[in-house]
Image (cartoon, rainbow, N blue to C red; front, side):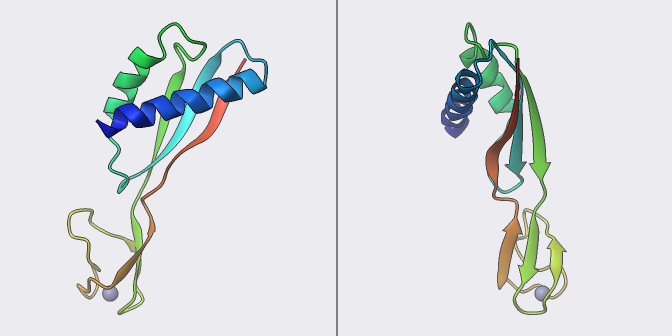
Length: 113
Ligand SMILES: [Zn+2]
């Protein structure tokens, strides 16, 4: 159910931004979602449709931009993508890796009118 809490925070951000700009409604919300963030975009969309009902965010388009996983291997120096399920370096199979991207989750921008 952590998508519900996430959706509520997206709505809160969107509403306060819209108020700040004296906007009458929010047209779209752009989200960045990392592959490792554990966030399920379809659930966000579903909760969003319900939770935004009768607010100035109602009908806003959710644009979800997925951020792929990239790692740096501390063993061989490999830098690049990684299979989500494996969690190890694809070059040398070391588990001694650092995650560079893929954990992100944030509201990147909003379009209001
Ligand atoms: Zn490696």
